[in-house]
Length: 230
Image (cartoon, rainbow, N blue to C red; front, side, top):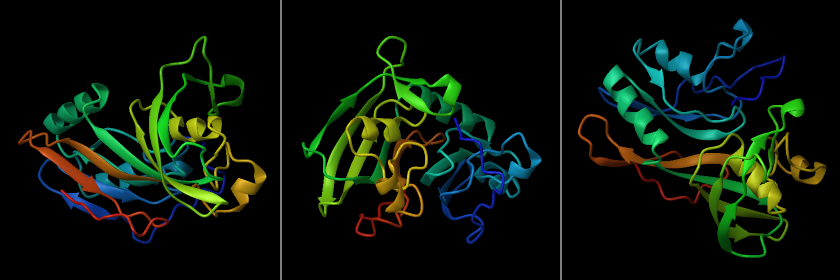
């Protein structure tokens, strides 16, 4: 679920499309924060990763999404066979995703698993919330990479892919992601000009060769992350 874009939606345009990898079947793009993954219903919200790729690759299809405020890696298919193959991998949880986030404070445990069911807070959509009665199973592994006392850099590995999962799980842990306009308290929100959440790594099977592949998207607030590519 993408949150509704602000009325003055002005996504970043430089670079227009940060392509990390492309071949006959797939294209990997590093999405900036503030750009929609796919177009909104309003024509004013047409600019998106999908439409930018579609302009150069007319058969492209988006197979997974990131929140507008989240930056990082998105893979798109460039033909029907690749689309079918990749969507099945995401559906069957054969892909592995790694995110980095800068959060408020320092988690008490340096690593752990957050297992809290989530559901849309419908009157306040697109806000999500923990709900043990009707929520869908949602699991995130986390590891603290570094901390300066005021904030911490954490590595996040979602097992499930619920809307706003990482944002709500870190909030539930007591450590909201800095710059989060939906879930962070005022102090955490003020510490960053944008949501400090980045989709950095994706492991999957190439839709043509079926070989295991890995792609890495550089993170602007974590420059020490190792660069790994396909």
